[in-house]
Amino acid sequence: MKENVQNQQERPYVVCHMSMSLDGRVTGDFLRDSRCESAVQAYYRINRDYAASAFACGRVTMEESFTRAFRPDLSRFREEVIPPMDHVADENASFFAVAFDRHGSLGWKGPRIEDEDPGYGGAHIIEVLCESVPQACLAYLHSAGVSYIFAGKDDIDVPLALHKLRSIFGIRRLLLEGGSLLNGSFLRADVIDELSLVLLPVTGNAQDRSLFDGSVTTFFRLEEMERLEDGAAWLRYRRA
Image (cartoon, rainbow, N blue to C red; front, side):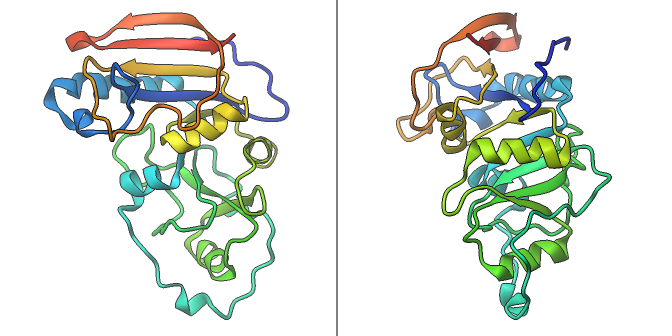
């Protein structure tokens, strides 16, 4: 996939890459329907084609996709004192999974994503935390070999987080992959440079989440369209 990536000295180039229904839903049973299987596989293929140095998800998405609701025992870390400073656990890492997890709630069993898909597997984990995260959580992340940065006191400061991801870890291109809460926070911060949308030929249910929670008016221009199997399509937009 050829693309002229903007020279981002202060933050990565951000691509919001999502699969969604015709009515803009990004969660729901339709994603597991066999009639959408080829489109979902196309989504993962496009993810790999971008060859980004990092992908980012919110806490809920990371928990559903990777940690499987694992909860570590933090009691053994209660007496440890860790300075509230950004922590790089692996200075040689070049591929990253960025978890926006303000309270440090995710439980990681190791420093990397374990997944058969090369678009995710092997990515070194970076937790984006708020300053109010408990000390025991920092000690646990240290022990698990997970990197972390602080961005905001009680809520995530998205521009600050992106600046640190670029300046500390050298991340030049980031795939933003949900959920809708995180996507919405990026949109409101005006840091989404590109939309990559795999459109599935189905509508969702009322309780399914939308592409952006708390959306604001933002204009994009269509750059590319590709017809996929079984009535799906890939739409690629740049910020206007």
